Image (cartoon, rainbow, N blue to C red; front, top):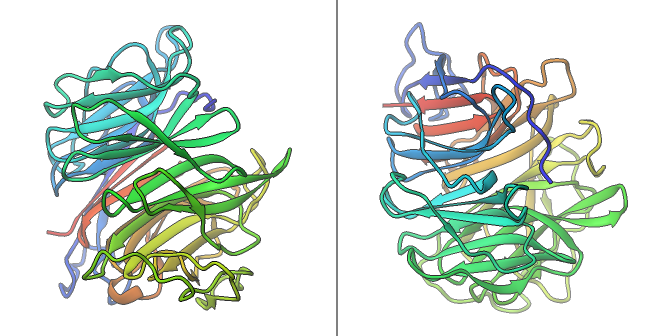
Amino acid sequence: MHPGVAAATAVALLACGCGSGTSPTATTATIAPGSPWLGTFAAVALPVPVNSLQALDCVDASRCWAVGSTVGVGGAPNGAAVITTTTGGAAWSSQAIPTAVGYLSGIACSDRRHCTAVGQASQSSNGLGAIITTSDGGAAWTQQSVPAGMSDVTAVSCLADGRCTALGTVPGGVAALVSPGSSSPWLQEGTLPAAVSGATSISCTDFQHCWAAARTTVDLSHVAGAVDVTLDGGATWTALPVPAGIGNLDGVSCLDGSTTSTLPTPGTGTSTSTLPTPGTGTSTTGGNATPLGVPGVACAVVGTTDTTLNGTRTGHGIVLTTSSGGAEWSSQPVTPIAASLTGVSCTAPGSCVAVGSTVATSAQAGLVMLTGPNGATWRQAAVVGAPQPLTAVNCVSSSRCVVVGESISEHLDGG
């Protein structure tokens, strides 16, 4: 079950910046020297009573959708929310969705008309997983059938051809769902490895290859981060060798930079065995009898070192990157004030934005980390007016990004 959401004033932050190679003006705050991610921030209002946004997707520089929950007004319970922007985040409007939906945690769009949002049905209906789709840009959302026993649908990824892959909670673990097209029914495919107890993000590069950021259960109070991959459209999933000593992994973004679609050659990869010291940026490699990965695929995965289930925010944010589809990983330097990173979006291999929250303080401020092309050093962005954690980010270019979180949205417009 998802935690309740306390009442808060909803605001959005508008960032207006410069593209790569453009000198900032006196009113423009440089996010990172030599980086294309530049901007200043200003507040705009989100639709009432939207309070907590958990995911978003942008199909181009102007059109995006975000999902999450509302805060109850006048005694009404918290509900699900879908909002959209046609101005790249400068202004948002709410869309009507089926009343049987209680909470939404993921969304993916194939184009300006076709989107899929996932989450949970309301307790007053059946309290099981929920999937809603639109084929007209959100003018109407329709609830889809979910396989019996699936208590929550937590993440979804859609391709331009309309094929979508989602992840849902089933008794004993997590299973994949696949819809071959916008008007096709959802079919349950294979389950993730047996130890996986939850999955929060999925990224697919084509109809066969998807990566899931997940967690495995260590004991009643502790978890470990996991990245799982499918090479056959969700029918089978395999755990990739990630570093030891990490907690929840909450975001993944993968891009296919290869020129072919060949599968990995057995025996060519190496595994990750220990987490390097934060800030070193060193590669974590070691022996592995059954190496996995997909050559040419670049991924970034974000999370935290905190392994406590539902514990205090005592961890340190982590960023793991790979250029081999997960055969080997590198740990990137992260600012010491980061407690957890929960979302990441890459526009090109090595050019990514990650969001999350700072160490446990009274403000629990939002945090943005950015890198430039070719894997330049990750830097912290100066976020103004983001007192709440940030949860998700979606970028369509190095100068066009939208960020959402607790009562917060941010918009980077680099021209």
